Structure formats: structure tokens, C-alpha cells
Length: 277
Length: 301
Image (cartoon, rainbow over all chains, first blue to last red; front, side, top):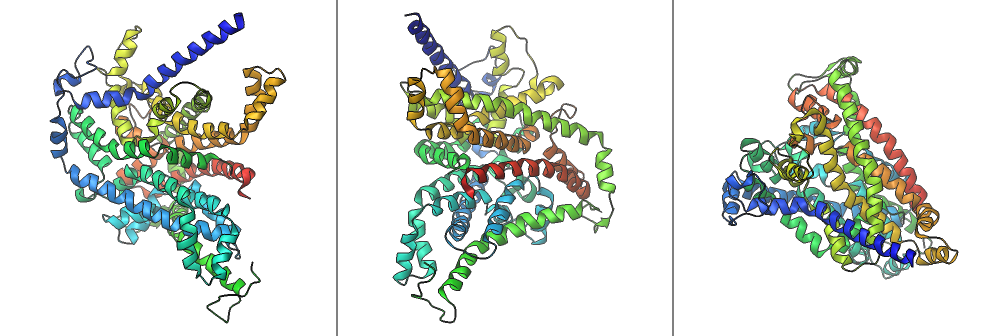
């Protein structure tokens, strides 16, 4: 009896902890939404106002009209989609080559590719900038996109997935006289949809809010991404927190929607990055 | 499969040779990209670390001078230790809390899909949004002080006080990292067959013993992987110090990537920045070697 009572109380304690944890996790979202609908005087009112007296929906158009946020969001979308497309194509090609073919130095190539995981942009920032400058790509979409367009993680993910596809699929197509390119497009890609989906979501999320690389390579206002616009807006007028939060809410919509609809694929992709299989 | 000589297009080559080339050509675009944008820059960074270069005038060979300058720069030593503190300050709590979260979410409880969604939601949030929302919450008149005021703690200007700025940034790192690593742990937990736990229960093991003798040993590869990944990702932090504190107050949040960025793009001392990058690289190199070993042991080859 006493052990049952103990486990009952343990269960209740866990429930309370669970709910408290959710509170801490979601507090920033709540605060962001609530603040985005306040007046500028309510934002720093004391005691803190948890909810606005009268929701100021006009904060949203007002915030968007500051700076060129239309352009910034457009640029972020271009960067995210182009980097995503580049990764999907190049990583699945390489993943297929590494998983299903034998050629000299294949293992060495794979190790070399994996070893670039230790060269994140933060470490090769200066020379990558010099390379892009040498190619004449500073202040261009090419300069924003191309250096990010292939990532070793994607190659690893695709290779692991393609490796598990049965060889008989490929051999049957080859016997039917299908070209190697045809096998890739018509057999491999359609059979990798789960991995491609996870890779697409992860690359979109990672590149939708690119900050560091655009900060270095895009000084023209017409090429800035929204994080640069937000940081700039905050630097100029940090009292306009209600409008900054309005932009932040808008910026969150694409990733939040994707996350809500594709939570499973999202979680699977992240899990794949940590799993041994 | 390589012996079947069917359907070739280049009669001069055997199917085997042709497949050899096909495989190589599939990998080639990725290799070329990584050579241009990863390997060459790395070699270039190493070379540049021996040159004096300000982006305007041509580089001048400088020997080990950049390394000496960086080594004698007290700000470099400060940044190094700020980075170390940040890395471990964020990672160590993440290891335990993410594990606890995964255990919690792995239990059967009413409303589990919703609870899971709520906990994993920070994964979807942009870094810049995280930085600005938390900066706002840390404001002296902000919501963090209000909540702490409720338990009797006075108002603190979190980001402008030397003692509190780095812990404030560390807290954000933890908040953002727990769901991410929680997902990885959870996937690991769910890959453990239920029979193992059932067998342990039959043998009279309580939940604590089952955790210690079944879950943790089976999850060791995942645990090690998370340990390395969390250190690596904390090592790269840059945006939060830049947007929230500009490395201040008094350099207490100037992490190594920020030091390098400042040296290169604010002071245009490219050679010194490259020399400092080598230190960051040494960190990443050590951690990645461990990580690759773990991946390989897990089944890469």
C-alpha cells in the first residue's frame, strides 16, 4: 500500500514537473506573441502586463514598413530554398555514389567528406570569405548561396539511407538497359523520399535564418536576410520592441508551420543524425 | 553483379570500369564543392596565419609573428576561457536534462503527442528570434526579473553585469539545446526492445536499477555522441553574443568565434584572425575525431 502511495505521489510530482517544464519552454513564445500586440508604453510597463489591454494588430503592418523587410524575407526564402535544392541534389548524388558503387579511393573520399564536419563556417570564415571574394561573388546571390549548397551531414544521411536499399532494384533496372543517370532519377530518388524529406526540412530550418554568412558577404541592403534586418532594427531603435517582436513572430511562421505539419519527418531527420544505423 | 556484361554504352569499357567511373562521377560534384569551400579555405587559413594581411594591401610574409601577437593578446586568453566556460556550462546540463526529458517523454501519459510537441517546439525557432526574445526578457524591466521578483530576488541588469552576462547566455544555450538532444536520446530510447526492460522487471529490478543496468549501457553510443555534439555546437556560438551583448560587458561574453570575427572584419587583421582560427580548429579537430570514431563504431564501417 505504501509503495503504491509512493508511486502515486511520484506520478503526480512528474506531472507537475512536466507542466512546469512546458511553461519554461513555451514562455518565450508566449512573451513574444503577447508583446507583439502591445502598445509601445505597455511593453516595459511595471508590473509586467502578461496580456495587452487591447491587441494592437496594426503593429504588424507598421513593423513591416520599417526597413525593407519584404526584400529581407524574400532573400531569406531564396537562400533557404536554393541551399535546400543544392543539398538535396548534390548530397543524394554523392550518397548514391558512395553507397552503391566501388571505385578507387571511395573510402578515402567518404572520410574526407566526413572530415569537413569539423570545418564549420565559424572556423573557415576568413578564408571562405577570401575565396568568395576571389570568385567575384561578394554581394551577390551566388556568394550567399553557393558556399552553403553542400553539407557533409546531408551526404552522410543520404548514404546511410541508400545503403539500405536493396541492390536488386538497381541491378534489375540495369538489366533492363536503364542508363546510370536514369537509375538515379527513376529508381533511387523515388525510393529515398523519407530521407529527402528529412534533409529538406533540416536544411530549410538551418538556412532560413542565415545570419553569420550574409553578415560577412552581403553588405548591400537589397541582399540582406531577415536576421540582419532584425538585428539592424534592434540596433537602431531598441525601444520598438513591440514591432521587433511582430517581425519575430512573422519570421517564425515558416519554420513553425513546417514543424507542426512535418513533426515526424523533422524529428526523424534529427534522430538520424544521432543514430548509429 | 559486376560480371554481367549487359546493356553497356561504351563498348570499349567493361561494365566494371564503367560502374567505377559512374560512381566516381556521382560523388564528384560534392567533392569539388568541398575542396573549393572547405579544404582549400582550411589550407589558405593555415598559410594566411603566417602573413600580415589587411584586405587592402598585398599579404606580407610574417613568420610566426601572428601567433606571437595573438598569444600576447590578453583578450585572446580571455576569449579562450570564455569559450571553454560557455562550452561546458551549456553542454554538461544539457547532457543530463536532455536525458531526463527523453525519459519523461518516453513514458506513457495522457496527452503525450501534445506534450512532446510543446517540448520540441524550440527546435523550430530561428536563432535570431531566440536572441531578440531573450534579450527582451532579460531587460531590467523584463519578464525574467518579474518572475525572480516573485521569489524575492531583486532586479538585475542581466546582460550588462559582468557576473551575470555569461550565465544568462548559457541559460539560453541550454534552453535551446535540450529539445534537440532530447530528440536524439528519445530515438535511442525507443530503439531499445521492450523485452529487455520486461526481463529486468521479472528479475526484480526497480525502475532505477533498470535504468542503470539496461538503459544506460545500451544507450552509451548515443550518450557519447550527444556529449560531443553538444560541445561542438556550443563551441560555434556567435550570434547570441553579437546581438545580445556585443561580447561585453568587459569582454565577459566575447567567445572565440566572436574574437576571430572582430579581429578579421572589424580590425582587418586577417593573419591574426587566421592564427586564432587555428586554435578553434584544434578544438573542433579533437572533438570531431572522437565523433567520427563513435559514428564508425556505430556502423559507418
